Amino acid sequence: MAKASQQVNFTVDKRNWVAVRAGDIIPNTAWISTGPRGRVQLVRGVESLSFQPNTVAGIYTSGFGERKTEVVEQTGVLDLEIEKRSKPHTTVQTPFLAAVVKGTNFRVSVSKSAAEVTVNRGLVQVTSFASGQRANVGPGQGASVDGVKGMTVSGDVSTPEVTAVAPSVARVPAVGATTLNGQTETESSKPSGTSSSVSNSAGSGGRDSASGSFGSEGRNGNHYGVDNGSSNGSMNAASNGGAQGEAVGKDKDKQDKKDKKDKKDKDKGKGKR
Image 1 (cartoon, helix red, strand yellow):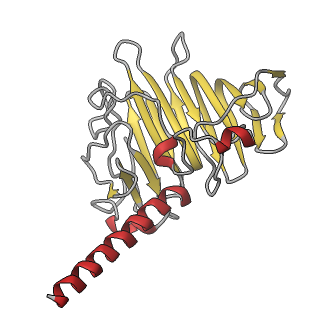
Image 2 (cartoon, one colour):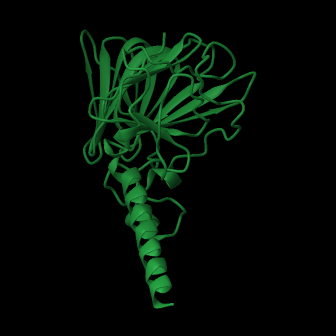
């Protein structure tokens, strides 16, 4: 059964945040945020995504016959249980690494300067953007990518082998960053349409809102279920200011200030008349 606590919100425009309640339908491409005490588990069939406190991530689903899901995690901790299939079908994008899976149970943790993948079951391919390193991480193993130092690996019994690949550029910026990891100074000076805001950097994932909606039923199609397993009847709508993520929150703050200024100017205009 899917569960949720207080301080869980989602947005589709990166400005207006809505408290998650039992029975809500969370659209494809929406971003979900948890506050300091917020937790939520989304369920789709045998798959689940568990958001830990202070986590900000967007979820993009495309396709019907061969559904693919991309999770874009800017900050925080996600625990994922992914159905095993013959081909990789789920990707987690972070500011420092990408994790591609066929089916597994693993955790992805993201901070302002690094990201880490630890695997409980299955195999996860982890790629470091800036340093051009890759490792297949198995049970009891982990891979950590520092934005400057690159990849380091660990393991309870053995460590994954690290191979060299072509460096690439991250899709989402770290919280507070103005450039993407792996981006050169020349590239960062060019207008590329990528912003330090989550809203613009998040996505080339699926855009079919019907095929990728997240809903409370969570047992068929591409729907993830959101239900409230706590004693509270609904989520705390007042927690919008809890932890929307620094990059996302800045957009909201700017809009609020602009709205207040516009109203103030309008009121002044009426007074003069």
